[in-house]
Length: 396
Picture 1 (cartoon, rainbow, N blue to C red):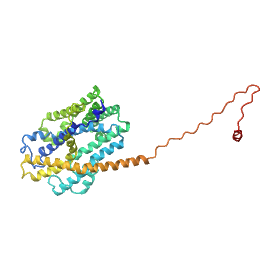
Picture 2: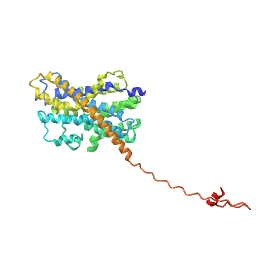
Picture 3: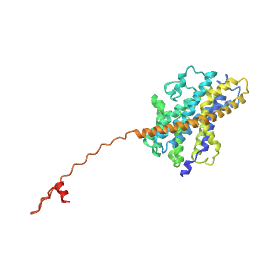
Picture 4: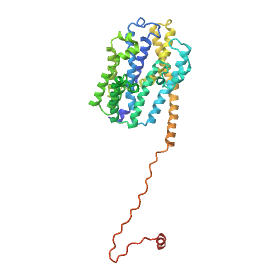
């Protein structure tokens, strides 16, 4: 594979990322009863049926993330990877937390925030680790992403190579398969059996793109596709509730997952390389801020205007408004703050590298002089005598 092909920005991947985000938005605005106050099946008789599977956009996100993060760590140090991820995640996230908290505080219609401790803890993105509620429910996926990043950092410490990535796929698959029966909380927390198949598949697809497809990589993909089916019932129950999930068929969810695998695989194998529409790059940039701000803010708007604006018009208007807000957040906060933060963090890493004392090696003691063993002089020969330095100098 040529470097040119590797270096091209995958515009189709940006488009798929936006599609996944809009699936989640569609699910929250059309399938859930919370912003409307009652079951939405009577409001959107047809759209409601499709929207109930929109939560699968998260699984598509994880699939894309496995591909993109494997590409990001290749040829980078841990410090460079940390800078790229932190400066990508936190600027928009901080702004989204503040904006969401202000809206929910002002109009506590679909959610409420009693104190600022919850908001302050959320600024770390580690709230799930100490059982602090999220300011916005969608933030749970960020903690899953952080754990995936930590797994990739471990791989980086050993060296990001084809071999080590394959080892990761194998070890992670085994850990995810065994964690439910071993019932070890720490193993389950990091093995993430519900989501591991998507991350692992993304890694395998990137290896196909960077090198070439082969039987081992295809076996990994097929195995993960089969394993991904195991938790569909669980994901439907947690997303929709047990009663609603029990009344729905699972085949549409299985079909969406297969479609996600096929699309990311097609992108990885170069089938979509000719798609280079510039607007897709902008669409990809809007995906993250849109995801961060759409739920509680958008639901609040829907709840507030649900009796004044026709439902289809309201959903379309709020979706467009969230896209505009995401663009403003990207242009005015994410880009400038990310650029400044990247500069500051790189300078900090340079300072660390300059001031870290390298590990001293034990100085080798000079080898003792090898005593000269003089041969027994021949009869009549005079053995060599040591010369005094001063005598030597005067002789010169």
